[in-house]
Amino acid sequence: MQNTQIIIIGGGLAGLTAAIHLCRSNLQVVLLEKENYPHHKVCGEYLSQEIIPYLEYLELDLSSLKAPKIDRLRYSTVSGKLIEANLEMGGIGVSRYSLDHLLYTKAKNAGCELINSLATEIEYNNQNFRVTTADGKIIQSQFVLGAFGKRSNLDKKLKRKFIQDQSGWLAVKAHYKAEIYPENLVSLHNFQGGYCGLSRTDLNTINVCYLATYESFKNQKNTGEYKEQVLMKNPHLNEFFQLAEMDFKKELSIAQVCFDKKSLIENHILMIGDSAGLIHPLCGNGMAMAIHSAKIAAENLLSFYNDRNKTRRDIENNYRKEWNQHFRSRIRTGRILQKILLNKSFANISQGVLNKIPGLLPQIIKRTHGKKVHV
Ligand SMILES: Cc1cc2nc3c(=O)[nH]c(=O)nc-3n(C[C@H](O)[C@H](O)[C@H](O)COP(=O)(O)OP(=O)(O)OC[C@H]3O[C@@H](n4cnc5c(N)ncnc54)[C@H](O)[C@@H]3O)c2cc1C
Image (cartoon, rainbow, N blue to C red; front, side):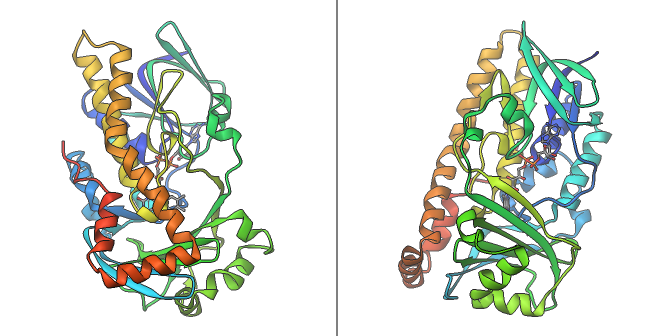
């Protein structure tokens, strides 16, 4: 039996960020992550600039990654009609392989105890948590942060509502090598049943990541056939795949990607990152939001330890309030945007409008992003 102040379950962007923030303030943190570092993850890998000031505050040496700066968006409909816009705030193209590993190293150096194990049970009793791992460890703590991503064994254990519904989305990602793709561009190309994002990464590759409905996938045998029969019907994707060469042995894929509303606090566990809610990837700021939610949770936990008058209830209420203030309307805008862009006739009409009013697209993008996050 081990005791600590805070247990974080899940060492992706949200979990590792919270660990760094809390350890820098000398709190005792144990983080459980089931995978080894470094590893690739399904993600579009476009990181919005809004979160860079906060990562700099945490003294993360992002410049060491030499990630390309991205300030232009290209969007096409299924038939290939193009529209382009400058991205006011922009972002960087950074692989999860590098970014998660950088955060992992920082968390370790900040004093976080990282345990490579799957958490299987969380119990809450008498103001204390008891977390059990697959290899039989038991750890006790005062707080638990749930940072276990979009879908985890623990969501089932906690009987979370969203897990009971079948989600109709799957996501596929691979890195490609190609000479022709510009450094500063993120592209979003629609196809029948989904959309595909392309952008350069720090690994001198082009990340290709798409989200597709099961409905559109079910008549194809595999991702290779789906790519040829569905994605490559968009002339821009066709051109790209003709010229590019895959840099992965095999594509990575995840199933049951769910965009439903989730509870922010479950059995007193504060949910952060995708465990709290996932914005539609076409908005390009899920990573920034995951990191930002970790900041909000970490600040609330610090206020508990710094102010004797604060109760668990205060922390939970305040976390919920701040999370909603920052993210609720963005997630809603993302849902509407996704509906419009995935509907063929809506997408053509809206593209016509966007072409006529060039300032409109940057305004819509702005509504799914926040202000730069400072401390
Ligand atoms: C198709 C797609 C494209 C996207 N593209 C972009 C993009 O271009 N830009 C952007 O900003 N965002 C994008 N996102 C969103 C972004 O990927 C997520 O918001 C981000 O990964 C959330 O980080 P996280 O830390 O919450 O979760 P994760 O990074 O998924 O981390 C969760 C961690 O928990 C671990 N875990 C789970 N269960 C357990 C357990 N029981 N015990 C121990 N460990 C456990 C997992 O192994 C994992 O490492 C995209 C998402 C999708 C689906």
